[in-house]
Length: 137
Image 1 (cartoon, rainbow, N blue to C red):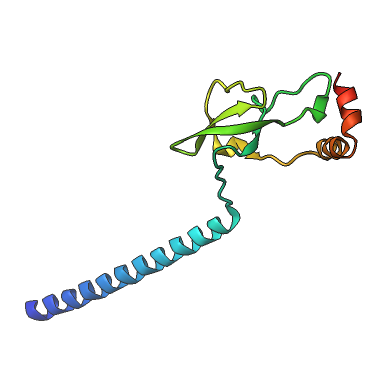
Image 2 (image 1 turned 120 degrees about the vertical axis):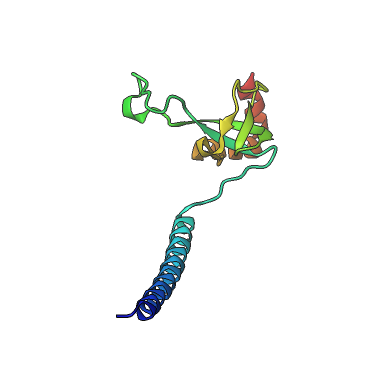
């Protein structure tokens, strides 16, 4: 094989390698896009506005109260969102007006929905206001 024929064969192989690299790169990009779409289907964005009521996870999460055992509440609250910081961090205030010591990450809070018993108490307040005034004394 002459040197010119050898050079031509090598350049053809190099062109083939470049085409294969480009094809592999496009396949990799497509796979990454599919992975991102699959992940984002399961992820729910949580964002809270100022004044929203939220539950806060009880820390440390693994701590069990001796009295309640496995029925130890996992969430406490309600708290009111009073400040928003960068990085999905929030400043909270309890219903008595006490501000929490540290900011808490958004993954450790969730939207507050009143329990059945709280709804029941609210209905009694609306239905029997005079009873509720007597009960508060």
